[in-house]
Image (cartoon, rainbow, N blue to C red; front, side, top):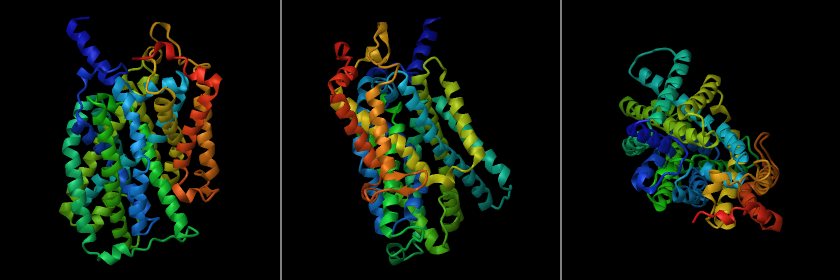
Length: 477
């Protein structure tokens, strides 16, 4: 292999692989990371989230639920950034120390399965946006067949963005994020300008399906907390490209804690405008734009939504491609992106993801909540910010994280305790609430806290303390 070819191979393994990235090799400063995370965070799912919450809450409840639900755990969740940046590794590489070399594969695959339906929703909205642009300019190309074609076009282009790499992703978001926010603000202003302040503040949702407004608000709070905790699955690969820990933590906290709630709130306002003027709900921005604003502004907004959906798919395919590579290190990055593409393609062909949004978010929360509670407790309170890179990569036979057949017993005990606590409070499959604790902070937050506390307690038991901290003689300095 020539020197140039070897250098290119090393660069490919750094960007698209799982080897640690040295600080001298990192490309993201604060603004780079902020725009990438914001472009990912304020994507089309914010409209769906905002409309969903607006359908469950009065205006004051909409504000409290979106701001409180999204900000309640985000400063804690973003602590996960620290070990990723400090050691230049994907979060799922670090989680080998938590779940074991085999156990982390199981958790990773489940996370991918419950996370990727979001991209099917995005592809459907992309398709709807393109069809709406044609309709707005007076060109009727039909519906059904073209809807699937454009949805597949979205995920094809997203896969290409992922393969292009993080520099293309960063450049795209620097253009996209300011434009998307500006146009969203203009559209919301135009949409609600025909309404009075009283129409918005005194808006009444249809809560006939609930026993009381308190019950509906509990569901909205749960939806937002589950929405915020779900970001734990997306943190994986991108923070390791940051030059400093502060860049990653602050960039993500500001994005997920301010930009995302803002876009969800704007989506909620558009939902209220649709309900007030037409008596119907829609979480599809293509339908909302066409109904509420003039054609020119609608087309500009739809073009930006279409572009943002492609970029978001690219970020998702890139991040989760690296996630899968962390558990399948010998598999090529492009092949893994192809696997993700096929999975989303199946969901797109099915077409039923968006109609199951509420239960889908809570089912995801069953997985995200324990993962979040355990990883933070493990790094800061059990391992005290020190772990063995030798055993993470099994260098020279180091095997501290092989545990029991590749599975860490304490981690999975805590994981299932978190799941049990969540199901004891609320069953997202049947939609049954079992205790009034649900109406306080939902079930996802309780599960996050329960799994973290359970993991800490189990690791204090002498046998499991030595079991988990068998890496102390080979600590990364």
